[in-house]
Length: 367
Image (cartoon, rainbow, N blue to C red; front, top):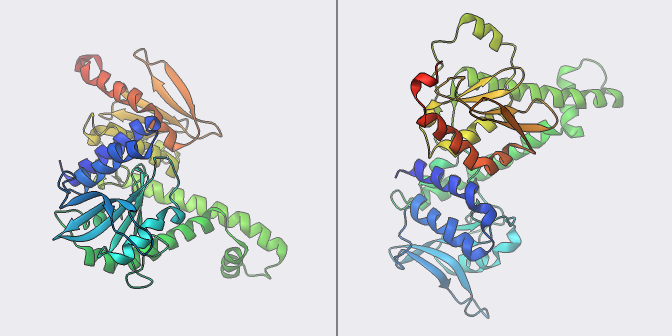
């Protein structure tokens, strides 16, 4: 199984099983060991390659253990500390990583709860673990830009020097992205002044600042939605950020349908929901067969671009969001959800919907 499939498979497992995992030990067995073994490619049953409960006495601290140490050539390269699934990852949870990083040859430390992974190195001071991660991975919301760097930590392509050299850029690009997200979603006074001074010809009074605070937020939302629509119309959509793929626009779309499409606004949240559904169904069907058709009332996700094979509907254009599921008579049940991540709770229902279509006669499902 290749890297992308392994990562997607583990993501699906986390989505399906996270709610039944109750302990740190269960988290390690269910999610962390498969990440080390299947995704990174290390043999978790070879102690010369992966040592669990790694002991390294530090000063007066005797007999403390780190959850996993990954070795190469007899030297520790990566340290991994685990927490229970669902626990937030805080730097306060990384005290053992700090101590062990200092006294071993490790250049990379990982703090994880089985779903989220924070990667640390020593950018700020040599041989001293940084307080902030240079890279973060969420298995249920994978940033495609993380994938090439994660590959460098796999056994087959291990290149710790390369990833450490790139860590500075990764660290600051990540911070800038979070800063921009905050400024665009909730612009502060300085940012509003900056924008107003460049587009408004008059004096920027308090009243003008208040006006531009709302205008800046509204412009940011429209800009991001337009970018999402441009990506959709260019048919460039990737499955949960793992490996970007091209979705071909069917030739059957008429000019009239194209004109109608112009009236539909596909939001970034709908695109995210579509990609979550694709990630869930990856284990059951070729994701190239899963297509999104948006309209003014809801966003439909179809199998084989066939409106008689509706997998689900996303009702996101209202305050209360719903996931719509259709039975064999095409009667829809709308399930209230709080956000995109709640789609994962209906993993089995979505899988069953696709399997039902696959077992039906093609004659019974015309275009």
